[in-house]
Image (tube, rainbow over all chains, first blue to last red; front, top):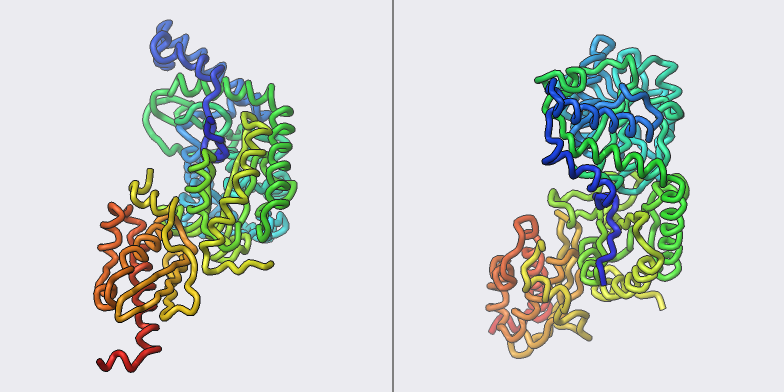
Amino acid sequence: MNPVYADHIATTPCRPEVFEAMKPYFMEHFGNPLSLHDFGQTARDAIEAAREQVAGLIGAKTEEILYTSSGTESCNFAIKGMTHAYQKKGRHIVTSSVEHHAVANPVKFLEKNGCEVTTIPVDSAGRVDPDQVARALRDDTALVSIMLANNEIGTIQPVAEIGRITRERGIVFHTDASCAVGNVPVDVEALQVDALSLSGHKFFGPKGVGALYLRKGTRITPLIHGGIQEGGRRAGADNVPGIVGLGAAAVLAREEMNDRVARVTDLRNRLISGILERVDEITYNGHPELRLPGNVNIAVNYVEGESLLLLLMHKGILASSGSTCTSRALKASGVLTAIGLSEQACQGSLQMTLGPGNTDAEVDYILDVLPEIVSKLRAMSPLYHRKD
Amino acid sequence: MLYSEQVMEHFMNPRNVGELENPDGVGQEGNPTCGDVMQIHIRVVDGTIADCRFKTFGCGSAIAISSQITEMAKGKTLEEALAITKEDVASQLGGLPPQKMHCSNLGAAALRKAIEDYMARRPAELVQ
C-alpha cells in the first residue's frame, strides 16, 4: 500500500502539469530575464505571464506581485521592509500570538532593534478579536501583521475586518497567507490588506518560490539589495522555472478552487467525526468551521505525539505533531499554548492535513488504524486509568 | 529515520510493559524538559531484581529506554542496577539523537527511585 500523506501543511507534491510547465525553463529557455537578447525576452515573457497568473489567483493587479524565494522571505520582506519604510510614523508593530516563525521571528528581531511590539492574544478557537486590534493601534504604529490561516490549527482570522480597521487608521497591514492561498479563496480587495505573503509549495507548486503582494502605492525597503530585478525591490537573478511553476500552480488553483474546497472539507469532516466517534478523551483544536478545509488538529489525552507519529508511520500514515518531543528545540507548540491547552494536552497533539489527492478509502484506513494505536499507547501510559 | 534500529525495535515491541501486583519498589520520574513520565515497578528476591515492569508517557525514545532499562535491570543485584547510567542505556540502544539524550536519564532515575523505595520499605535488610 502507498503511504497515506496527511501532512499537506508541511508541503504538497508538485502537480505534474506544474512540473511540465517548468521543464523547458531549465535547459531550453535558460535565459536571464534581464538580458536584452531573445533568450532574455523569452524568459522575461515567461515570468511576466506567471505574474498575471499569480495576480489572478488573489485578485491583485499584475504589477502588485513581487517574486521571492519562499513564504518566509515574503514575510521577512514585508515586516522588515515596511517597518523600515514607515519608520517616520513610528516603530510600533501589532501582531498576533499565533504567527508562524516566519513572522514571529522577524518581529522579534525588530523588537530587539528598537521596535515596540503589541501581541494580540487569541481565543480558545485561535481567533484574534478585531476590536482588540483596533484598541492596540497607536499614532506611532508602523505595521500590523496578522496571518490569514494558521499553520497548526488551521483557524482563519478575521482579516477583512482587521483590514477595514487598519485602512481607516491609515496603517499598513500585512497578512501571512502562506497556508491559505491556493487552498481557500483569497481576494486582496475583500481582505483590504496592503501586503500578503504566499508560498508555491503549499499549493502544488515547486519549493523555492514565493511571492509578496504589495498594494500599489505601499512603500517597502528592499531586503535584498543588488540588481534591478522586481523594479529594484528584490535583487537576484530570477528563479525562472520556479516562477513559471508558481504561475502554473496558481492557474490550477483558480480553476479547481471550488472542487478543492468542497472535496477536502468533506474528507476532513469525515475524518474528524470518525475520530471523535471512535476515540474518547480527545480535544478537537481550532475553530469548528472557520478553518482550513484539510486541517484536523487534535490533542489525544494521556499519550505523547511523537509516539503517535511513529506508530502511524509504521502503518504508512504520515502526519505531524506540536509536541515538545517532536520539536528539535524541545518546545511545545506556541500555538497550542496560545489557545490555552495544558502542557500535557500539547504533548498529545496530532495534526493531520488532507489534500485533494487524498481518498475516502485513505480516511477510512486512518480511522481503522488510529484507535488501536491510541489504545496501545494508553495501555503503556502511567497517566491513563481506564474508565470501565 | 531519527532513531537507530534498536530504538525502533524496542519502541515497536516494548518488553515488560505494565505493573506488578504488590511490587517491592515503585519509582516514578517526570522529565521537566519535555513532560514525559516514567514509572517502574520492581520485584526483589534475595537482593536481586527478579522482575521489572514499566509504564511510560513519552516519545519513541522514552518508551524504548523504558523497555531497555527493564531488560537490563532484570537479574541484577540492587547494587549493579544502581550503577546503570544513562550512557549505558543509550549505548545498548545503539545511541540516541542528541536532543533525546535527556530521555535516557529518565530511565536510570526511575529505576533508582524504585530501588530507593524498596530500601526505604525494608530498612532491616540494609543493616546486613
